[in-house]
Each structure stands twice: as C-alpha cells, then as structure tokens.
Length: 325
Image (cartoon, rainbow, N blue to C red; front, side):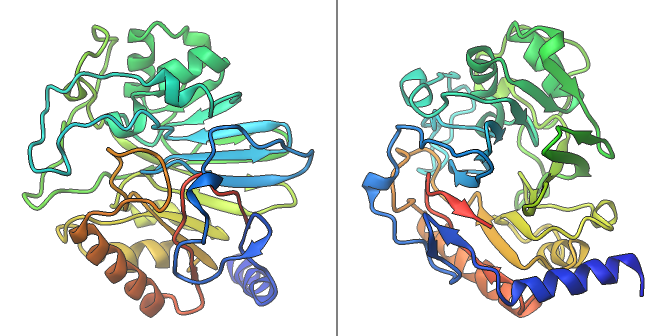
C-alpha cells in the first residue's frame, strides 16, 4: 500500500472518534458555533503549555497558539471601510492601521505567514511585526514591502513554495498557489514588487504579489492547510493530506472546478473550514456579518463540500473562538 494511502487510512480511522471542539464543546456541524458576542473579547486567552488552539480573525486571518508560541496567518484586524461591500469601492482608500483594535489582541507573535499582499491580508503585518518582533514569511513582494515599512531584513524571510521550515514543536511547509479571479477573469491590483517601493499609502499600493498556501504540522497535533484566495495549483498539493483545510470561499465562477480540484488535491481533509466569507469591513464581533450574496455562496460551498467529500466535516467558524482539532 503506498505511503499516501496508509496516511489516508490512519487519518480516516482517527476521524471516526476525533471531535472538533470550540472551547471544549463539540462543533462538528456546518453551522456557526454558538458563541455569544461577549466571547469575542479582546483580552488574550491564557495558554497552557502543550495546548493548540485556532482562532479565526475574519477574512483569511488566524491566530494559532502552540504551547508558548503564536503563529499568525494573514492577520488583518483593522477592517477599514473601502466601500467594497456597499458598491462604492475606493481604490485610493488610505491604509489606516487600527492600533486600538490590534493591540489588545496581539500580545505576542513568533511567526507571521502571509499568503499574499493585498490590503486585507498584509496591511496590519508590518505594525504587528514591529510590535512583537515576529518573523514574517511571504513572497518576495512581501519581503520588499516589509523593507518599505522599515522592517529589518533580518526579520523578513522570502519564500516561494517548496520550503519546509522546522520550528521544533511544529513545522510549516510553503506551497505555491494562485489568487482567485473576478467575474472579468482579472485579479485586483495585480503585480509584484521586485525592489522596495515607497511606503504604501493606499490599498492600491499593495498588489497581490503572487500567492502562497501554508501547511502547518504540529507535533502530536493536527496538520492544517491555510489558503488565502480561492484558486488552486493542485499539482503542488500532492502528498500534503492535511487533517484540516481552511478554504477561502469563491466569489466568482471563473476558476473552474475550484473545490473539486482543491479537495481532491488535499486528499479530502476530515475537516473543512470556510473562510473569507465574511464582510471584513465591519467590527470584529459575532455573529460574523455576511453579505446576502455571500450567504448564498457560503451555503452553496457547504453543499458542494458535502457532495464532493461526504466524509469531511464542515465547520463554519465564528470570530475569536478557540477551536481544537
């Protein structure tokens, strides 16, 4: 039996008894966990050594606490209003970092993983890195943008896909990926930065800059794949076989067979968590606000995952709720 099949067999066997929990309560159904708005408190939760928790920060953002270490993925907390959800999108919206929102939530960070450099994924990263001293991993564009914000090169690591980074009690594998396309088959703010630009001032100054995915493997814990956009280079997923996949919701149908290719490439994870489904220009409080058209897309996504991968659980997350896989 090939090694991939053995891993699949063992993983699926474990899935018959494993629970997804939110604060210790089972949350295996495809509905948001019943967390009252008060559970989305800004005060960081105390960690116990050896504990692994995953907290969604909206969009594609996550806080992962692994014992005494904290990994952030696309941390975007400022949630500035660009008019994107009201039909009056302003590409010249100023990049305004909300330190009053960030500071109570980001007490520490050791690593920041950036999938791509659009404002709703990257704009808070330089401030967070300066505040915490975290090392930032991302594309060469993320590296040059970090320099533009005054981060030292010693705090920035450019990656492109294929790297496996060992942090002792966990590892991160970098996966080359793709950004989704809008109904016109285009990418918003395309382009890369091949040298440090002037410090960005508006959202248009933060291009896509190529897109990555990340596979986090925790020793004695889950393996989790993070996406930041709804397209996939499925040939790069061979052999990853994560337990959990954080899957960005598609907002157009221009990427063909997105979910079938992604889920097959990931060997049908036992837990699928939709992300990037919320209105990320509103306050970070539960229940997560969802635009009417996005609510329809989310329901269609849940139904599609159940059809394509019937053994997968679908967990629709709420903000800042601790999930344990």
